[in-house]
Length: 290
Image (cartoon, rainbow, N blue to C red; front, side):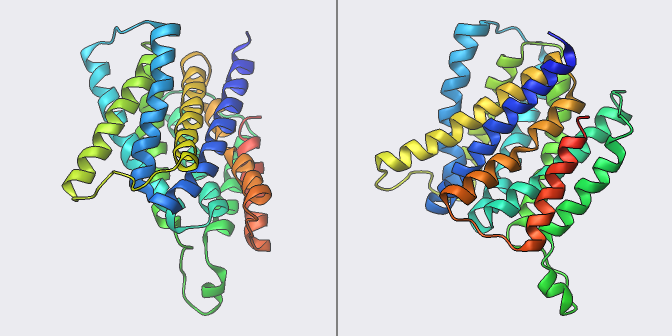
């Protein structure tokens, strides 16, 4: 298969997987909190990763240096998602989903300047469009008119997550999966992340148990983890065999899926400025892949 086509298809898989997962994650975080949502959803995703590892890959070989980097990725993955799901817990799903896309700017910059991957002429104005779209979505313009500048609720946490994902997770993950089995790396990252969330909860003396879980809640949290794992597997496959500079922007168009599901099933409301910002953000992301 053509490398570019493979990258595009992998990016689309990441977009659908993460977009659907984020929609469910918003609902789960509001019900049980971001810590519990992340912990139990990651366990659900780990089972899917384990299936692929044992029945599709079967490779358990990884060098010590790459293992150390994988552990680092797992820590960054966990911390990033704790901030991201906190944004979902307290913020607007459409706004949070659009804001996380700023991670793609860091990934493209590192891919271009450090890893030597090519950047097309269209991607330069696309990045500017993306930044402007995120600005429209993230800034509270009502307060701005009053003379004060404030980010919408949950945006600060999401921006921190975007920096962690864009600088410390995805570029390092791409470097690793290019040199060893991408399914094994995805499995180990998720395993480490579960351990990190558990240790953080214990340090903060926070309970991870869910009181009186019902079938719908269990299914909801499981869906978060399974769709998120699909997104990770698809994007990691694209990074291993395609170009991350193409995979990541397309996968980051997950806003299309998340907002679409929110508007259909949750009656999510956004104002005109935010709507324009989301449209520009999505257009910017899609254009970066041209």
